[in-house]
Length: 136
Image (cartoon, rainbow, N blue to C red; front, side, top):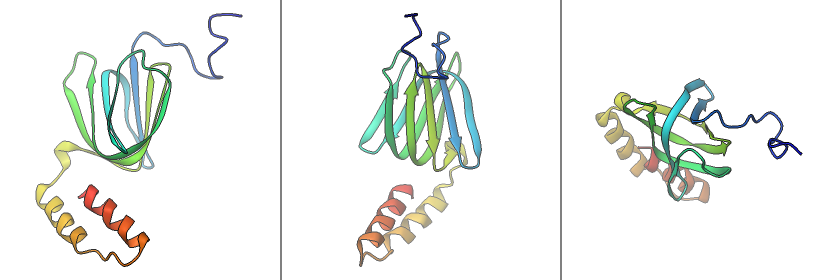
């Protein structure tokens, strides 16, 4: 048995750092080395550093932030999805990702006002309203 026999097929051993890959249905948002990653989980926040154990989880709606190696922190609004960590590669498959600098407070207030007035007569409508409130 070699030192890499326990690795899943196609998963290379760590190259020495943490890599973040953020992908949406529209395409790649980020793919590169980072020092830290914090994602919105469905029940709080989850942080990843080099050496994190393998992990798969649901993403909530909220702030995705990370520090690039030797760089400034980056902040994004993430609209749900899943996260996977394998061999120091954090893969974020997101429904939507928007740079925090691109967010418009006036638009967010209008979306919140509209979400507040959504109907709640059925379980489906309650779920839609809940997601709209979180997103706004």
